[in-house]
Image (cartoon, rainbow, N blue to C red; front, top):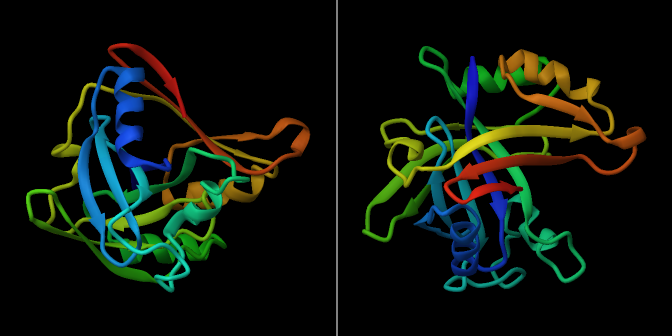
Amino acid sequence: MAVIDHLVYAVSDLAAGIDWFEEATGIRPAVGGSHDGLGTCNALVSFGESYLELIAPDPEQPDPPESGLARPFGLDDVLATDGEGPALVGFAVRARDGETIDGLADRAADAGYDPGPVADMSRLTPAGDRLSWRLTFPAERTLPFIIDWGDTPKPHTTQPGGVALSSFTIVHPRPFDILGVMAALGLDVTVAATERGEGRAHLRATVTGPRGELDL
């Protein structure tokens, strides 16, 4: 019913994050563009059937609270001086053929997880093209948000490749609380318990490129 569309990794500086990823894996993510009004910009690299999004504050847009809107994925808290620093902050799933974003959202709601309302989104690429899609904004980073690219080419088919998603795990203090959501979406994702059922929920992934493995 659903497959992973992409993982979202927060970095404080996009250019530095691109250099870091290339140094670690041997593959350089491509600049994606800016999310107008959200204060963020991104770079992308394909895993083949999904992709990784590096997301960072956009220096060309005003910082909160001047903008009046906090950046998505809790980016400001994650990247604050006393925050956790660069981290996986979310992941998106997309419907398989024959399924819709609205159908997946309803299915998640029936399983007890409200993925939020469906919103229209867009960004401008460095080439000046406007890409559009629909998504639900995530309420919690360890549960998926849902995306629908419509007629826009899916980024995993257009971005630089050469890296693979070797593993992806949701780590949760109460893993049985989210297994129902995964089942309702038909999503095959590993769910593991935090050590002794303590600690915060988080995402964990390993990416493999020509230069070796990178743990996210």
